[in-house]
Length: 327
Image (cartoon, rainbow, N blue to C red; front, side):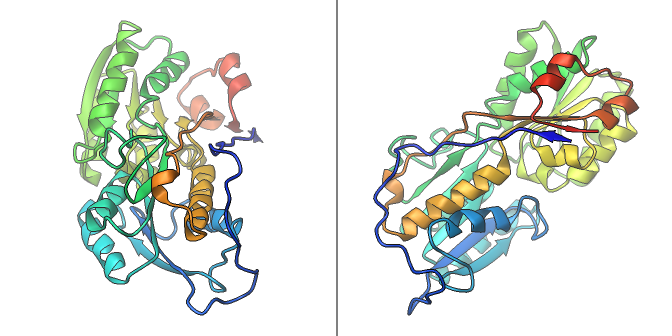
């Protein structure tokens, strides 16, 4: 397995951070962070990356920092109550992972600082006034999962050069659905291909979507970035394998599970940088003044075992540019 580094640069250079808490020193009242996540506690990359980032700013869970974890377990309908619970707990900051948690947190409070990670445009989503000057109580990371959908179409077509029809799998309940459709339309239009839109917001619908691609003799499938799909990596990978559908995903965890190819931001780095932002806010900076960051690099990950099982030969150009290759 080979891997190349990925780093998201923080804008603004070295900001004045004020006095950091001494390592190991327990303040009279340790700050409390509400950790609002769409998945379950075993989700990878998980809280460890976030805690690593905030540790860089002098905060260590259990020493001078308290964490309140709230997990939606893939159920968007639970998020409003979980966010309201954190507000009632009077946490000092909410870290919101994914568009639905970010919206739930933003709806629940206009006073408590929020650091978010979203896969779509944070301005278009109504979370901030602008990227360089967010205003309000929220800032974070817009990781462009939806904006790079055309690139995913391009990469899938490099793997499957005979492709004539590409399917896009979306969760119709997600705010990432429409931007993903627009991106896929742009990608297929540039190559003179046909696009088929498939919808899934339940586990049964996921299986049915892959089966429909196989029965219609579709040439490949793009999975739209969405927390619902991210919490069901194994099911999606197994469905692609069972139906022999070449599929491109949006995060390396799918390839680590056995998926064919992925292209997107490094979530481990994003989560760590969220921790850094959270630490800066706890040290006195204002969310309104911290720019919403976007990635400058993306990870291309390829699983050669999956390619071989599908009878696909991975072009040398893709192998040469891949950040990580699973043998």
